[in-house]
Length: 484
Image 1: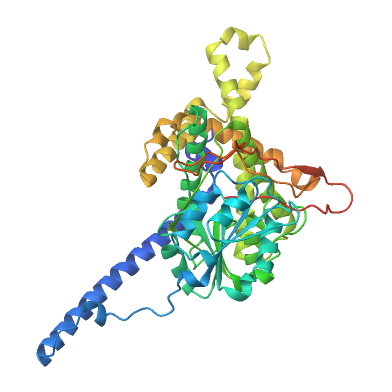
Image 2: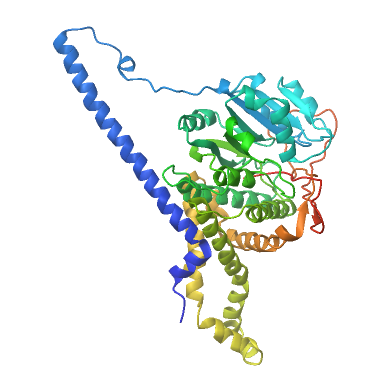
């Protein structure tokens, strides 16, 4: 029996996206209906008010005076910004400048995690608060130490955890802070976009950044938007590139447990599994981050993120709640879709070779294999269920972000998806066989346009997610960096 193309599409691209995409559609519909209802009620109320004022012959008041103001507005003065940095002299100034345009310098805090370049000097020159760890303890350890030394829990109501290569959109706080007006919201996830600076990037680099940007767009619009609806709230990650937390929940979160390679998956699991609250999200809370523009850094970063998820799943036991159900569905989808994507090149080869070279297939073992595969999958099924659907996803990303680059590179994304899936499967056993050290450094950075000229040559640092064999007791060295 040949598998229908639509079923193959669901198996490859995931029931998880179908489910939460539907929830996201319900959320958007609910928001639209609420907006329309508010507009109708406000208009009818205003007409009645104007009629009453006319009858009483009283002086008219400004509309802004007649509309009741919302209580509980949260200002940026209640927000601390915390940035952990390790040898980030190429990008940290621009990131801090984007923050300082939105919050006072006294609210911004930088912890240098064993930096050996000009990171501390550049950060201090901007007027923000700067401390250094005694050694390279990793991002999670540096964040935990900074929260304690800066006394952020006691001094601020909210904290924004920001990566050193990330710059905030001007409307970030205006969009994110109102979500905290709901007392159930413990954290707010930012909307990540790739910092698309093509200067100095090769064609391969542009393809890699565009592929990562497509992943961001589809996962946030089709997955996270539905998962963070407060009526059925369960998302697997508040990305560490730009995430906000109520400081009141930080003492209950184990930010730096031993053996984890990144912190953001673990912090999100802690929020849900300890019942600390819900996660808010809006596509208007935008921040821009640099993504790897060479294959080596891309592979290492993807491996680290995949390993971080598997390690976190290993650490947190499932419970009888919606979050654990979401994680189970996510893991099931990751395994099934990854296996199918990894097998895709071999299946395609078995289907094509006998067609193109019938003599070769007849005299080899490919003939029986071809017949076995052709009983369940055909070239037409692969074309419609995999290739065409992937191209349609690229079209959707182009429409959502209004960028034609997704169409230009669309034919190559499927190959990179195979690579991503292979790395996800490769890191699965490593979650039980390896432990992370505390050493970390960033992928190669691109000097942003208009960036400060350094007084001495600098070298872009390469990611080094080192791991140790998981034999014996826990390592004393802790986890490293995080990311979206």
